[in-house]
Length: 235
Figure 1: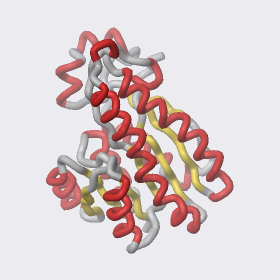
Figure 2: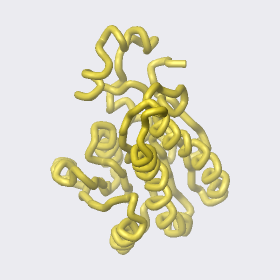
Figure 3: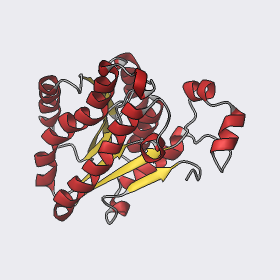
């Protein structure tokens, strides 16, 4: 049984990914920081899962948590899903808004991924999937910080895929568009979605999870270094 770690696993997309990986037979570590109760409830629901809590912007704390996880064996499937919003147009954006969003999505990616690489490399098999956003591909007003953080994952994905290609490890980025959730229903009314999305609907979390589960499988062994959008046809 392969062992998987999903950061930001207590959220809508992260939770769907955790369920999909468990359904594929993996033991899933569901990471959360501020919503550990949700992660624990999801782990209990799944069964072959457990919740873990650490602040991935804190390198030392992350290292300590990952060392404990690695005592049970290497992580071979890593889903870097954690990310936060703190929106403002750039002329009015506070420095801490910029730094915090970058810290979670981009520095958090490094803090989690780097300690897991050598144990993964020794197994000669692995899957790293970074969850980005349509905002990083197309841009979005008020989200220069979020777009920059997630776009940074695209370059990191490409470079890391080259470093790990000969070790049986693939690295890809998935960029969801508008995905159904309680928050998107408020931000994107149905008429707005019809204007923005050629398929005229929001995507479902399960659709993102199905794509991630495929990329995490042995069937996707020749796909690496790619940015794959799942957005209903948005350009």
